[in-house]
Image (cartoon, rainbow, N blue to C red; front, side):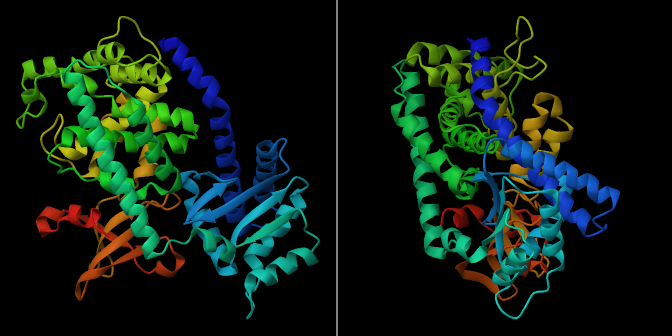
Length: 485
């Protein structure tokens, strides 16, 4: 079964992942080219080298397609409606170019199949040198492109994008209410599954699938509200919330990987059921408030095997239950085969298992409720996972996860350089140090009306995050803010 599942993932996901990777390479090359154009003349060897690389990657990405569309929506980059990030080393070039786009009223570009290196050079030069007129800059620069005979590249008006993408307070509150509804339905579902498992009754997965699809819809649209909820660690029934959190983190990572909707469905169900084996352990062990002794650890390390057996015995065999069984068994096995349960011989660990392992560890360490009994701040957990625990994870997936969580993870209480206090509500993949923040207080006191402040907005460049704060130290109930509008 394991060999088959790995092969299936490789064949089904491979093409889509390759296309996402090709888009990422192409977009990164474009911003590197734009940054180079600010430093060198267009006949310089460095510029010509970057120009050649971008044109090759663009042609490779477009392949048999007739165009390539790059858009900026809610500060995020999309290539042909696929969310794409750029390499971390090139974020300076991204920020400079996107700020310039904003000044010119540009929300995106469309490259036609006849685009040439000369067209690209003329475009990049014009984007940097065009003098912003007194009228509509977008209209003026579009006309200039036409005058120079560049018809293989067209510009997208930022106001047209904003009409479809701007979120007002009412929309934001609606999204947050939907996220809360999905989140708590998922917790109730996990609790019911655990109780059914404890009674050795069959597990019906249909309701779980519907909940997972709700999570997928919200993650694919804007998963920040769910990420906020996953950052809450003080629920009374954290055992059940943990599985939901892992599912949210895993689906966010899977979406960033470019998994298809059926694959995300299987991943989400597997993540929700990854700890189902704990229902077969003594409840006082699972909820033990003190540290585990050696005997406790022996017992706890049985839950992956118990989970696989439980799924095999209580769920109808299909692709979802097969993925869930493998993930339940493997999520504590490291890429090198160490961990538990002990393998009789080395083998490749399933992709879903590797994703869930990262999500599970992050949520466990930040909660202080599962294996360790003292919560660690999320930024410290990321450093621990990268530098002290790296051998436990797939390096590529871990790097991508860190990019998703960001320097200031969602739910963090931060102090801004203007002395305002806020809670991080969304990370900005293009600039991890400049997240979106919900302001809760300023120099004049606490705010009674919700106010969101996006540090990635060019208008907010004068303000930075000064540092993260411990909310307990200042008597601030972050959970109250997350659960309210």
